[in-house]
Length: 231
Image 1 (cartoon, rainbow, N blue to C red):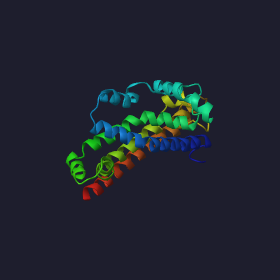
Image 2: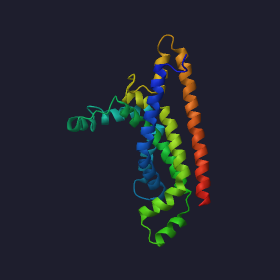
Image 3: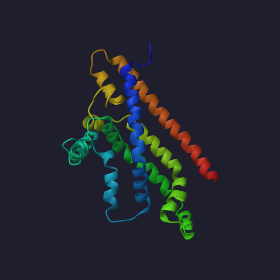
Image 4: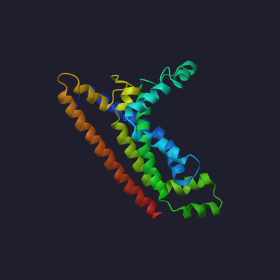
């Protein structure tokens, strides 16, 4: 007997796909937001910081609803995408990735921001006095020294995406083979007769994935720290 049923394997593969897409697509925005929060002072910074961290303090269903009224077929942006390009986002795996990415975004930003704030600004100042542009300073000094934080942020975001439920079910629904990720598959198993065994396997699988992703992030962060420290 296989360890996982086709139902569980499908949910696992979709979760990995959704989490990977969410983290990869949101990472540039997370780095930019973290740099702005760590290095810039401007009117409205507190409001921007609150907006970035909003998914941490409101129910995930609220985020899912906001995404639905924005990117849904009749939403502010979604209607335009549908009429102009024929693109429908809601109730697809892309919607699941967007919902997961938004919910994980604050964790990724926070890890990267703390790492940027730990970089000695004098090193950046030396690079600027040598004629480096702000973009070159960011690419050659700040980001390399921030790599441990970026790795940690990616891992935290990935783990958070794997566990996302509320925003996903609201914005992407619970469609078999399309949007049913591991948490949604677990929810489904708990609500069907005789689904307890499947629910237990999905719980164990979710815990294993979480421990593996966090363990890998710790190992990678340590390795990157040693490499950066040795340069």
